[in-house]
Image (cartoon, rainbow, N blue to C red; front, side, top):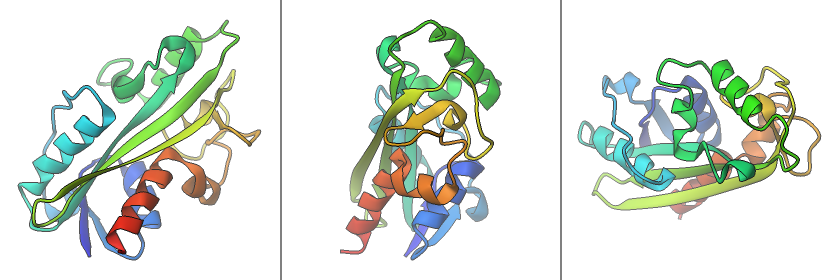
Length: 190
C-alpha cells in the first residue's frame, strides 16, 4: 500500500519507514505537498488527525500522521502536546532539553512518559487512531546522539540508558511511536 506520512520531521520519517517497511512509505515532501498545519487540537490524537486530514486533501493515497511528545509527572503532563514548541517555534531540540532539565532540576520524582497518537486516513476517507506509550524517567543530563527531540534525557523503564544511547533497533521495538505504528501495521495487514 502507498502511504504518505504527513510530517516534515526527517527523524520521524526514517523511523516510520523502518517499521512500515512492507509498504511504500513516502513523506509529504516526496509527493510535493508543502503545507504547515495549525496544530490547535487539545490532544495528541486531535493534532495527528488534523495533520493527516490536511495532507489527505492533496492525495488519493492512505495518509498517516503522528503527534507525540513527552509528559512529565511532576509538571502535570507538560510539555505534552506542546513538546515541539516548548521553547518557542525556532528553538532547537537542545534548547528544549535544557529547558526541561532546568524545570525538573531539583525534582525527586523524575517519572515521565512518551506518548504518541498515530492517525490513519484511508483512501476511502475511513479514519483511525492508534496510540502508544512508553514509561520511564528523566536523566539528569543529556546523553547519547541517537534519536531526536527529548531522546537524550529519557530512560525507558527496564533500561539504564537513554533513548539517545540505545540503538535504533531497540528504540524501534519499544518506543511510543513503534507501539502505535505496530498497532497500525497490524490493522493494515488484516
